[in-house]
Each structure stands twice: as C-alpha cells, then as structure tokens.
Length: 219
Image 1: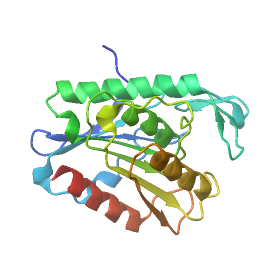
Image 2: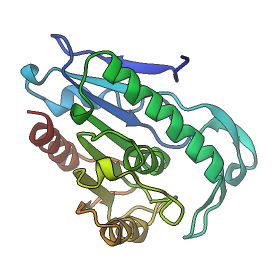
Image 3: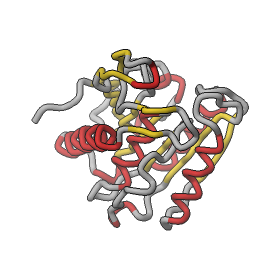
C-alpha cells in the first residue's frame, strides 16, 4: 500500500507510541520537526513522530497557485468554504498512516493525531471517524470544517481532545476554534480548550502544554 511521504523522528528505543502531526497550508512535513526536542519528552516514552507531506494542488484563495495543501479553500469567509471531497481524501491518507503505525507494533490507543490549521481540519475528520480507539486528538489554530457532514465512529466517542488557538490569530479567527469546541460538545465529546496571546503560530507556553498533554496521554 502506498503512503504519504513523511518526515519521521524516531525515539532512541523501539517506538511504543506515535504522534501523526499534520502541517498547515503551504508548509510541509518539516514544519513542526524542530518542535520535537523542545517537547523534552521522557526518553522512556519512546514516541515516534510522523510528519506527513501534503500533496501539492492549486489553491483557489491563492489565485490557483499550486502549493502544499490538504484540500482546496474556495473562500476565506468565516464559514470557510472548502473542497470537502479533497479533505476526506486527505483524511483517508492519514488513516492509512495510523494503520501503518499499528502494523509497526504501536497500539491504536497509543497513537495521537495532531494538526495545525488546515492539518487540524483533516485531523478532526481522520481521528473522529477512525474505527479503533486512538490515544488522543490535538488541534491547533484550526476549525472543524466537516462538523455538519461527519459520521463519527463510536470507537472514539471518549477520545481525549485538546483544542488550542491564538487569541490574536488573523488567519483562522479564534471564533472558529470556539465553534469547533461547541460542535464537539454537541456531539458528546469533552474537549479542552485553551487560547494563547499569539497570532497564527505556536508559542513556548503552548509547547510546554503540548508536552504535558502528551505525557498524560502516553506515559
């Protein structure tokens, strides 16, 4: 089976947990690679980080320019009109990566799916529809693009979900993060939500929180 090309950061011992982390529009799998040492995770957690590269496609909001993207964005209104079929296709590719981690000996309940911005929208779809119980879902500076169309899987009804957002985000309004949390709660999930005084980015306080959250999920 073919898989998305990925940047992988292996632990010092055989991996017993995995984090599949999706980048945002115009970036690639190297974008969050430098964050791994900053997390300062205990070595005995043995976490493999998998940073897939999205395909390169024309993006309507950027004048049709071809760039790395998980799906096309048709307009930048607060409703975020997106190509749902492309988003679901990307979600399917992420689920193949989850299955590969299981094949490599990592239990499903020790696999975290994470995503920033566009990658976060795909992470919602991939994790909440996955047929085996996962270790957690972490979304950053993003929105729940398929909230009105998703068919969730009961296997992950109790999944731990962390939603994080910059309070000064000019690209993805914090309102969209709040809407995602409300949608999740209406579906019966119990997400945590935290904002940080930052724009469309990641900050040191957030990195520390991500580290703590991963330790709680995977220790």
